[in-house]
Each structure stands twice: as C-alpha cells, then as structure tokens.
Image 1 (cartoon, rainbow, N blue to C red):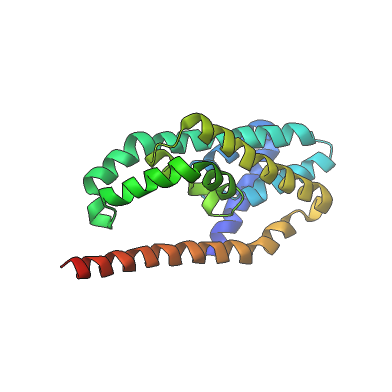
Image 2: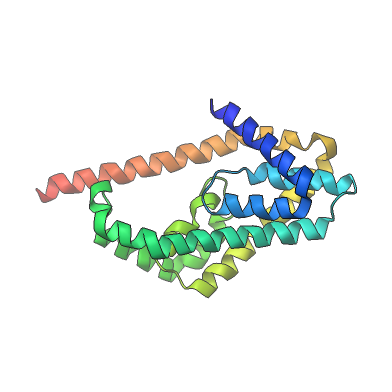
Length: 207
C-alpha cells in the first residue's frame, strides 16, 4: 500500500513539473516542506533529468527548489508557533506532552536550534516535519530561515546533480533511497514509542 502511494505521488510530481516547470518545482517543494509527504527525492532528480533534456536550467532549479523549501518551512514554522503551541499548552497532556516538555524543547532550540534545523534538513522524513517543533519552540525566526536555507541548498544541489548524472534513469534514485527512507521512518517511530514509554514510566514513579 505504501509503495502504491509513493508511486502515485511520484507520477503526480512528474506530471506537475512536466506541465508547469519551475512553478511546479516551487509549489511541490513548498508542499513537501510544510508537512505533506511529497517526495523531494523525486522532485529534484526529475528536474535534473529535464536539465539534461534542455528544458530547465541547473542553477535555476536549485535556487527555486531551495526557495520553495524555505517558503514551505516558514509556513510550517508559523503554524507551529501560532497554532501548535497553543494547542499543546492546552491539550498536550492528553498526548503525553507537558509544559515541562515544551520548556525543554524551548531550551533545546534556543541552544542547538541552528544545528537541529540544518541537519534535520538533510535527513529524509525528518526534513519534512522539523519546522513544526522549531515553530512550537519559537526558535529565533531569522536564524531558522538562515539555517533552513543553508540545509535545503546542499540537498537541492545533490539531488538535481544526481538527476543530471542519471539522466533518463533518474527514477532509480528513488528506488535506491527507499530502504533508507524506511529506516529513517522506523527510527522516528521508535523514538516516539520510547518517548511514550518514558512518560508512562515517570508517571508510575510519580504515582
């Protein structure tokens, strides 16, 4: 089922970029960066193939993809700061997120936010959602934008370059990254389960 969904999204990406070019790249990278699982591992390599085909320009694709990533990240940051923060402060206890947890997140992003955002942008799965906790923790907005851009730039360069190198076989990149994506997803799920387990253990001790 997951494979079918990925194949559907990949075909959607190809159709959008084929029809509206640079605007499609910007839109798709924006969507991917604000929490909707649109595979940038398809967006940028396919764009790289179109560079080889003479339809697009390498530098333009990289810049537009990176700016689209930044735009979507800012939207996700804003949602986290304006909506997510208030919701978690009011209802977070029902999903095992306390005000103490929010304070820890605030301190984490205040001290290490630049590194978290930068390296988070370089990791599949994580890069799609890292902006929400940054917004919830109200990380310095200017630093958030700077390190988001700096993290998105090498990602865009790498995958456009891979698309150029692979040419008409650009889709093999997605196949080769599938196992790594699944491994990252598994790690994220394990981290969430560990977080829930720790909370239940602490609750038992406090009772």
